[in-house]
Structure formats: structure tokens, C-alpha cells
Length: 187
Image (cartoon, rainbow, N blue to C red; front, side, top):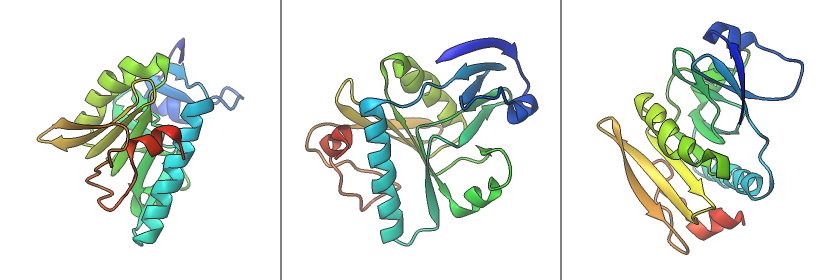
């Protein structure tokens, strides 16, 4: 992520447009350019999007899954844009004609680890997402070849890690039959 020194309020962030297609997170008033998902990161993100979409359709749930285009306001001057977000249809409708920033916690967030995001995704975002009361947070780590599924319990995340042919266990997607290896390979 590339940082700018420009200080913005949340309201200024909502209307910020630098004339490019670059997406920015807001961290303590400063803009951080999000690098586009490439290679394996992009493959995993699209695979998860498709698999979760299919599961939502199969179970006829009033949910929507989105790929890195919805922000979470995690503090007064802080907005995070996760790699993947599962929200209710009501939440999706609430952001249809405004900046796609959720104020209420979505059902599930997933972040895919890149070499430059390890600390941010494992520590910083974990703390912010717990404070926002996001019930389930996936950390997909192709570097360590594991998937961590964090479930919120009394304000803190309990972690279950999955590797290889282990079937992941998701409190939100209880009938999902994906293994860690399938997700990490994106097939």
C-alpha cells in the first residue's frame, strides 16, 4: 500500500476523487492506495467469490457477496476495504446509491495475505474488525499455506486454522464443503 500525507475527514474521504481508478483505504485520516490483486491473490479472491455466491444461491439466503468494493468504517477516520465481504441484502440495498461504506458489521470478511499485508491483516485489521463486531473473519494465507477462520466471542476472535485437505468450518457457511487446499489453489 502506498501512503499519501494528505489528511482527510471521513466526509472528505467519501467524496474524494483523484481522477484515477485507484481505491484507497483511510487510516487515521491518511489515504493508502490499495494495490490491485494479482496472480494467486486474485485467483483465490475470485474463487472464494464464486464459491460463496453459489452457496448463498443454493441455500436461498438474502445475502450478497462482494469482491473488494465495499468499505468498513472501523473508526472515526478509518475505512478498510476487505478482499471479500458477505453482507445482508438489507445492507447491500442501503449502499446502492451512496458510497459503499458499511457502518454496521457485515456477516463475514475475508482478507488474502500478500507479503506486504501480513502484519496489517493478522493484527491491525483483526483488532479493528473485532471492535466493529464482525462475527466472522477469514485470513487466507497462501504464504503460510493455511486458512484461519476467526469467530467473534465476547469481543475477541477465537481462531481455528485449516491446512491441506482439512475441510474448513465456517459458522456462517455451515454447509460449505471446501478444503483449505482448494481455496489456496483457487480451484
